[in-house]
Image (cartoon, rainbow, N blue to C red; front, top):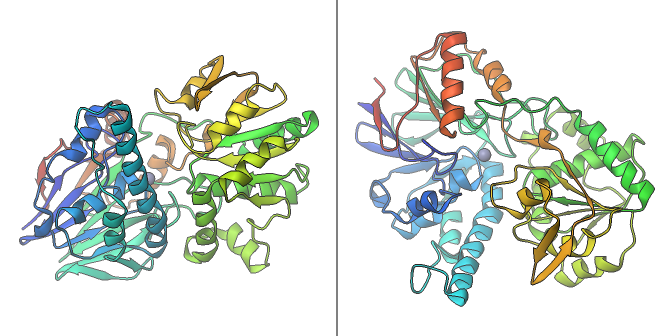
Length: 459
Ligand SMILES: [Zn+2]
């Protein structure tokens, strides 16, 4: 008796949690945090749908918090079993879960200071101690290595091409193959190899984030070259608000590539994010996650993160000292949507100067300062300051880590026989419906969009 229950990421792109049950054994695939609007986040505070103690194992697709960020809560509520993941995911979680815990604690403290929580006092969902307990339960695996989270359940990881360590989980229960898709990456991304083609699975679970959209066909190198060259000419600063893991390293890689090939001058680059800095060695160490270009660079001893003009900025004081440095220069700092982190003080200093440019390289959520700047906000506010925005605002959307609908169809068309059933998760309702319709029309597959809490039999 095999069944699958969808406990998250059904009507939204966060909170991925799928419960696989085989003859009474329970294995949780991903353990994501619900993020975004308050009503969605409130789900993190509800009791977990099954008692955490009753779970036999947890298996993760990749390190993003919408797939892992609930783990400290699960452990706080009694889970003590193994948590399987790839080796790079294991290392990334050591940085990301501790950071997530610190953020939870800071937000609760802030809410208590301002008295703006409905809960008195506001409590963090979990703290650093809970996160550290998770790290003690992690078991890392190589791609392709078979492991058995429970007897009779064989699993191995395939590359998903999404972020460092990201994977699909091929699961075999007797002769039935179930493929957990996690998030599907893109073809031709820097550093990370392409998604592995799959030719057969009986059941397929896959995301639909960009199920109704194509990324623009922009030449990322050419765009970045144009922006940096202009800033160099104007002696301006390029401020890049960036997520610390993945995007920051990809931008460094692209900048070094452009410099080496003589397309941009050797402008000083500052990585002003301790979290991004601590993740850089992981991108070098995890050779299993390198694409051909990265492998060739490392083989010839040309580490893309050892540029002579790159400075890792560690302390707050070092960060503040940059205020007096003349351009041209490039600065990468968190947070990606300018709603936290060191990028804010750089924006206060640099946004009023028309020689400078603010370059957004990731998705800007509704209601964030990043979205406001993209929409033409005349001022930027932080730390009690408000400054006019005269810097140019640019965006490079093409750096997404998620496959667009064309890339999803490309990967799906690698199947030689259609899965018996394909489950679509991890998408807003419009995107999910659009992808479902397209798969049915073009491939003729049996597609289902499960509801929250729905159980399906896989027999
Ligand atoms: Zn992801």
